[in-house]
Amino acid sequence: MEKSIQNKLLKADKTFQEWRKVPFSKKQQLLSKLSKLLLKHKEELGKIITKEMNKPISQSVSEIEKCAWMTDYYAKAENILKPEKIKTEFRVSEIHYAPKGVILGVMPWNFPFWQVLRFVVPAVLAGNTTVLKHASICFGSGDRIEKLFLEAGFPKGVFQNLRIGHSEVKEVLESTIVKGVSLTGSEKAGAEVAATAGRKIKKSLLELGGSDAFIVLDDADLKSAAQKGAEARLNNCGQACNAAKRFIVHKKIEEQFMSLFLNEYQKYVPGKAMDKNTKISGMARPDLADELENQYKKALKNGAEIILPLKRLSNNNLKPGLILVKPGNPVLEEELFGPLGMVMIAKNDEEALALANDIPFGLSNAVWTKSKKRQQYFIENLESGTVSINKSSSSDPRLPFGGAKSSGYGTELSLLALKEFVTPKTVVGN
Image (tube, rainbow, N blue to C red; front, top):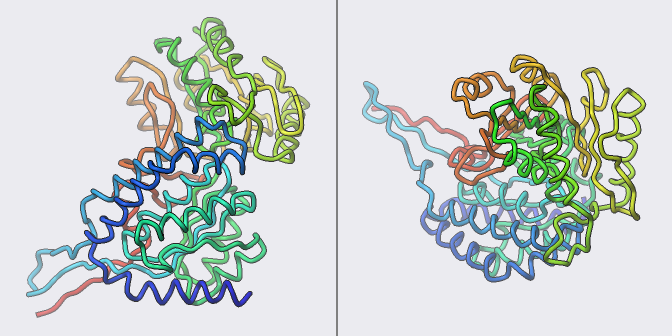
């Protein structure tokens, strides 16, 4: 391991010994300052995101605003980590929550600030210190987040950005200083990191891919579903783990819904990322566009039908595509990370549910129906970490976020996230 990286880990460990003792309320005061700084610099920070990964500037600024909201939520959150008294026959019987120590975050490029802060904020509020391995195209975002923490008054070592490559993650995670890891990324990356953590008996939290279903039943508000569906598929150029990727449409309203949906979908015309009116720009890298094109061709080769062709406009710019897919197509076993949507037709609710669940992933599904009974049927039977009713899937600081099946394990956001990287310690006696 490079000496500079080792020194940062040592700094994180040394800082942890003092940071863990800082009162919860004092930590929250610093988070409040961080939230205000995010809002103050949102235009500047948004430009960093857009320059690094090509997101439309309006969406980049919105990402920073969401980070500020989330940080402020934790700045005002209930302290669920204070000692908890349990009634027993003993004089003392309590649960204490001890922070684990230095936690490594391995984060992706698609939401360069949100993904990082979503991991870091509850981890440091719980008393841990953190180090980040960001995506290689987002080192600037990582450095700027570190500066924001220092500007807010956090001690040096609470959050540090490590400019390392994928090959160095294993060595950092194997360090005796690092006590756990949180990864947001692909299924492959998650499996590798979890295997390393498992061998070293370290806690891991994985938020992996998704192929979320957007189920539209025959009693849905079709106009709203069409508008929100197009947005849910094409926001951030379709580069989101919890984006709507499979549109499962009830046969009775297929023609009516698809007419509305196509009208909304075709409003997304690739434009310049720095233009505030742009709704969709290019993908983050040309090789990602190559990969999506290959998946598109593979789907067609295996029987998918073109509804709207996926067209390469330039290096990393694609005109959004839409395909009709039937069960058994191998593309359903993969995540489409870009502006390509899949449509499936279901003859009834039971078939819609079966189609939704018949994939390896289980992150965040949505169902559109006015019937409370039908809503409950899908709530109880969809195999995913989140079920959204008459709205598109999105994460909310107040609510837990995590996946089922190959979409990972562990909880981010909400008060529950505060307990991910702590050890419950039983204190009992007379």
